[in-house]
Image 1 (cartoon, rainbow over the protein chains, first blue to last red):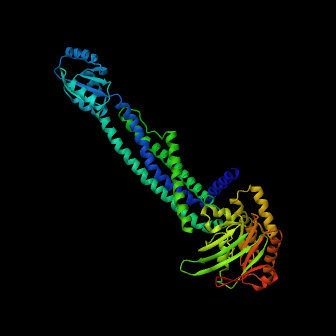
Image 2: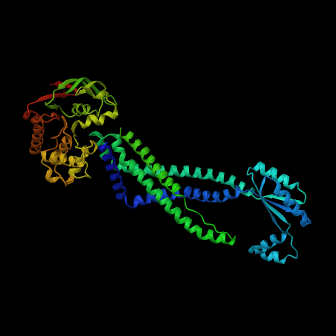
Image 3: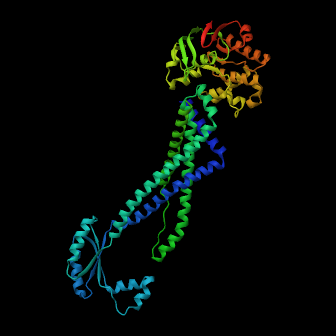
Length: 300
Length: 218
């Protein structure tokens, strides 16, 4: 067992020395892998971030009930009492047309247009939250609310979130496909690097086999080389991602401020970051395995 | 210790390198495999560590049919044999010391013990003072001695050498054979292929004479 561990330690040290000896070539390899991995990792980070926001919206489905412009305020109060009795609703809030107009005036891009209006064109409204989140339940609720007296229009505000959810599912598949493609690229990069190493050390491998080295002993340093190369690539990918998110956040923050919101893109969680590094290292190891296996077979 | 029984070796393309070879070598023997170039000496030696497999017949090493060994078992067979190749197969990007350390790396010795063994092997062949040199800096005779040091560093019971004195001057050849004789005196079985009759006549031992792939005399 001690001899086995010692051989692993020696193989790891040999692989580390080889990477050190490669110098700029090793850096370029890590950069190629890092750039390739940063694309799906970045897509995943962005999607996770947006989905977290959308989930909050989607899990609190909101409906806006617009009253007829000529509906009397007394009718609205009766309607409010009726809505509050409805067990399917968790929250009922009356938004008088004056409040709606005031809010609109506070919205910078349309403030001037609103100021030019002679009279308030907005109706009284109710904003309600539903207990049910399923699309079918929300549709049924909207249908029932639309039939209430005085209601002119019902808008299910979470529809866009549901559409976004569907889009996100498509994007997730896209990112998975991109990750698979780029993972294949990563394996190819490692395969080629290890192939060159094996060819460079062909004489040593042949001699070692002739005088009693097992295939496992010969393979081991190359596996570590692939793993280390993948690991370095994973770290480069995270560094690229961090730099891109920092750069994007400058613009995102300004954009969010124009909507009166505070939002910034988040970096990957610790678990996701470690998963990127582990995934990258494993792909490097797989590339090394395929390469060494092929060339040891060829030597036979 | 080593026994060939009806061994034939045919290479792809139909060339019969060996035909109907049968002989036995006891432990502690200093045996020569003699014959002209192309007689089949190297092929015969390669069958012992299963670098080549016999087309028919059996090769037994310590009772083990090496021709039937699985590929995964070959390293363990070869670790118990010392092999000196015709072209030496030294690593010219490593030092003399590192070349001798190579077999110890995969036989699992602790670094201190491996270093001690490597230096002892270099000392036996008179190369301890050159341990930091690169093999390319060594003379032909010294390179051959280095190949011997690497072959004996794992203390094998059998040492196989293919034309170890070819391309060497008489003095260097005598050095090499002296080293072999010293190993043989401590019980190592030696099988040495050579076409040099002068070498064979100097060391009275078992001689296997090959001619066109057949055993002419033993």
